[in-house]
Amino acid sequence: MHYTGTIWRPPYEADSLILEATAGCTHHRCKFCTLYDELPFKFKASELSTMESDLLEAQTWFHDPLSKIEAHLFSLPAPKRCRVFLAGANPFALKSKRLLEIAGLIYKHFPTCKTIGCFARVTDVTSKTDEELAALREAGYTGLTIGIETGDDKALAFMNKGYAAQDIVAQCARLDAADIAYAFFYLAGISGKGHGIEGARLTAAVCNQTRPSLIGANILTIYKNSELYQEILAGNWEEETEIEKYQEIKALVEDLEIPVEYAMLGASNPVMMQGRLPEQRTQIIAALDRVIEEIGEDRLRHYRTNLKHL
Ligand code: SF4
Image 1 (tube, rainbow, N blue to C red):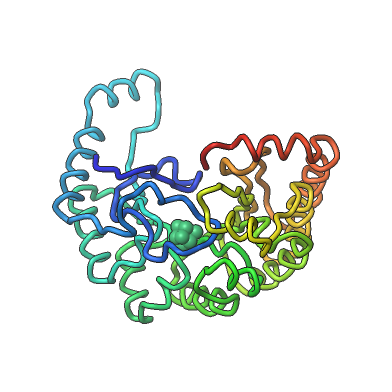
Image 2 (image 1 turned 135 degrees about the vertical axis):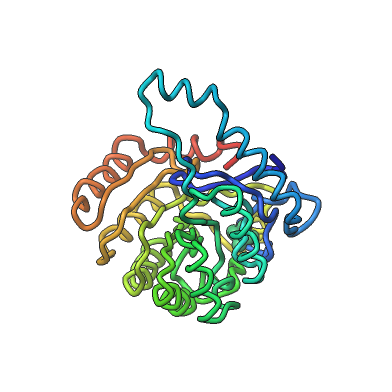
């Protein structure tokens, strides 16, 4: 398989076939982000011929007689590849025509595939017409993961995210109309010292106008090669304490009114948790309180400063 640099996928895509459709990010300007800095280019789309050879390789592996015998011996369910996740920061930025060609290739080699997902930026949706979104859904595109990060306009602008809170609401309404499901990533700490809780409440207000299947919270980890680190050195921005980040997450969980799966599963979370809102709100808040009271700032900070890689 062709993979370029570090490959990130959401935790819930663990069973999906990971197919590289792009490498890097079309935006590449968020001040906190260092995810694709190791690449010698900003963004690159894979050649269709390369993707096809990856699909052929994956198909060979998928039909491996040994894994079939193993499944039979251990009474495992017959393996069925029914979802493909396109790797890259935002493959949804590709033109609809190319995304449809990719879908055609996938179904040609994996007729059992039912859906195709990928990371997407809010602006990748903006650039597509309603008709294009409908055609993409028809071709199986659904379950996008969108790193909205926050609904706090000041933080979005300071961090160069390239869209405003209202764009999240407007573009997600278009995804809803096209029946394309989506999950959100939220970035605790993005509003900066003294603004975390306010940022979380603004984010909840945005999320409450949308229909994500899941909201996954990640926690801001600042690396020295980020633009944000330079802003801190210049005295333009201050990081929240780890406890403030958790209080912010509590405010988000308290204010979310939509039915949604809530998760903290990525490497930036020292404590993993997952639950359903609103049913498990009390338990999630109690778990967050335990992190604040029993683990405390020093140990949380120790985790953060020793997190070498996201
Ligand atoms: S859009 Fe995502 S991958 Fe691209 S720079 Fe921003 S945070 Fe990083």
